[in-house]
Length: 80
Image (cartoon, rainbow, N blue to C red; front, side, top):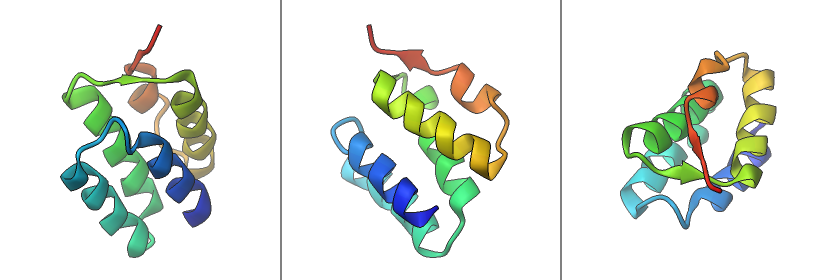
């Protein structure tokens, strides 16, 4: 799970500020995988950032494994 989250975070680096990346990284480092993914979704949603289809696919895949609610990613704006 850690490796998948790190790959996702790498995909998000262009969209996220250094502080946002660091916030997610802190959760990954302490094995709070579910919280890390929820934070990624929250950053995209709360900051009004769009996700690419690649980012969204990765979020969905990890989301299913961590059993977070699909509403966390269903509300995200997908880049066109």
